[in-house]
Length: 360
Image (cartoon, one colour):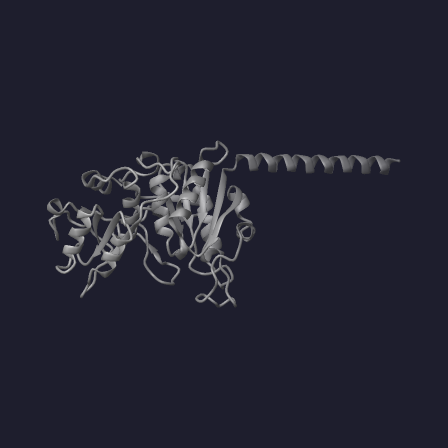
């Protein structure tokens, strides 16, 4: 009888421990930030034929829950939920994808129980999506884009650690109000200035000259710089009622350049043209008349530069005041295009659009 009583007491004691442990785990989980992971595809969700396949793989084959399950450490970093917004290789990203993603991000961030968002994304257009969101997200809560240069099946795949760091960053109160960020290779970059600088190496993402925001180390972010340009809640752009964006294309500058592409874009109804000029946004003599004619037809002309660094000087390589052109400041051509599309949802006034380029 004594043995039975002891067994009952032991069982009750073990039950109490199990219940207390479960309660402690529940309390700990409640204290964790809620980070929503929105998956869009890309290399981070890609797979190759073998573990040594790092080129020639297939992007966007792995679903969001599989990505989350592959990094069990996420459960200690935050309360994580996943949602597959779409599943594409990012070179196929469209304006429609951006509008859908931006609206979903704003919807989630408006909820009290969502503390931050991580977006898994292909690296080819990751910088563009990041800058678009930087202009249209209406919250100071952290939004972090993350990708990978190697598919999930590769030896030393960089996706899992990048995703882990991105979740830590999105869960951190220190990341609030910093604008949309990019987390890759233990580094934190700002959406406005980061760019992909290499076709295939893991350290492809850089913020040339202007500098990254900080590092991820020891499971926490360290910030050393912040952007001085307005972003997120401080912008004038609202996509909540937009179903489409104005068509804007990029005309690339090079030796022996002609106006074939420019004329085709204008004929197809473009509302704006980004001229990715050589040097300081230079305009070739044989191309200038085509740009002037395009402006007369109502298209907004923005002089950017293919160089990748530096300010495009207003009235430098062209008389912008006389020609009624706009300059892109330090934005590269692909980001200059994004700002012009959003600007055109507000105004066609070139002075106002130029103000936006110096503001954002």
